[in-house]
Amino acid sequence: MTLSLYDWALVAGYLGVLFYLGLRGSSMSRTTVSSFLLGGRTLTLPLFVASLVSTWYGGVLGVGEYSYRYGLLNIVVFGVPYYVFAIIFAIFFAKKVRNSNLVSIPDKLYETYDLKSGITGSILAWFISSPAPYFLMLAVLIQVVTGWPLVWSLLAGTSVVLVYVSWGGFRAVVKTDVLQFLLMFAGFILVLGFAASEYGGLTRLFGALPATHVSWTGGRSVQHVAVWFFIALWTLVAPPFHQFTYSAKNAKTARWGIVLSVMFWMVFDAITTLSGLYARVLVPDLAVPAMAYPALAEAVLPEVAKGIFYLGMLATVMSTTDAFTLISAMTLGRDIVGKVRRISSERVLNRYTQAGAVVTGIVSVGAVLLVPSIVNLWYVLGTVFIPGLLLPLLTAYYPRWRLSSRWTFRAMILGSGVSLLAFVIGVMRGSMDNPAYPFGIEPMYHGLALTVGIYMARHGRRRQENGGGR
Image (tube, rainbow, N blue to C red; front, side, top):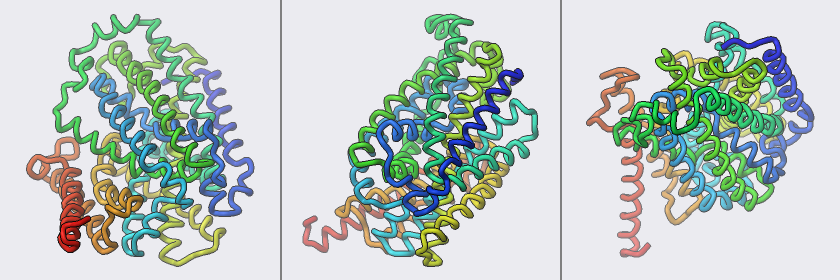
């Protein structure tokens, strides 16, 4: 993807504004844990929506790859289930989460269960909040315009994010997210408009696509589609959903903020999916489908417009990368190391969070080099770690359904452990791209079935002990 001098000027201006917004007032944001990690719980509805929309939509290159390869199936697997679970979160959990006045998911686990279960759940939450897929996307975006090797692009992008996140905290994330919300919509509306002008409207577009691309199954198996619905359960335990809910001005702001965010995601999904379909027609036979959007921009956009679209892609990725980096850093530094070492000083915990950001960056770089695929990183993180965290966290807000700390710990270990074992066996029998899982069943199903079984068995035993009552 070639950028003109004017396009580079836009990129330079964006980075300058990003650092300015991120670092301004950072000394104030580090005074207390609540201020550094939650911005003082003052998010208004517009700020909540702009931050959540941009943060929860960071996989733009993965979306481009999927819509290029499978067409409308992109909305089915990366849209619909996330809308459903986001609304479920808004209805059943937003008020409970906000009124808890906690700081993080691990706080709820520590409050509800014992130290052992809390630490185990915190470790699972740390993996789920990994920014590794987004560091990879950021590196690829840097690589496509600079020509640098992936490793150098990865190190450059990671360093930029670590600087303003570890220094500015949550306020840095929110301030930059507002800018990035505007850029992501502007950039993709622009490329879609130019693509439609270049090729024609939807009737001609759909007529030129393979039949699978205009099918809601995309030519994929039912099990393949279904597993992505289960991975969308991620939404209910997603650290950003909890983090922004904790940070909202009140419970009403959080609930309606999520509902409005779903509406924006629906619009953005339509725009990005159509852009991927235009890429499939205008730039056929791409060797690397993840490059669908950059290739489309190169084909239809003039200078300046190309720079704005590049900023749109960059902003979409950056907004998610910084939020996940902060949450992952907080989970590691404050909620795991700080808890094990019994640190109570807020300033020390903030320093631990800053150190956690560096460690998170290093681990993420290692994960990217080990699994250099955006979709595969999403798949591994969701498949392995969701089964162990889902029910323990959700039932923490509904005492009637929760288990004792001892059985919760067992459910965490067995749920994620079995999923990890099934995943490893599948890859060893086959490969990462063509695994041979035990019984031909996706690893997540193994873990979820086991944890659900544990909860059902324990509740059945409890009813027996209570003489058949609840």
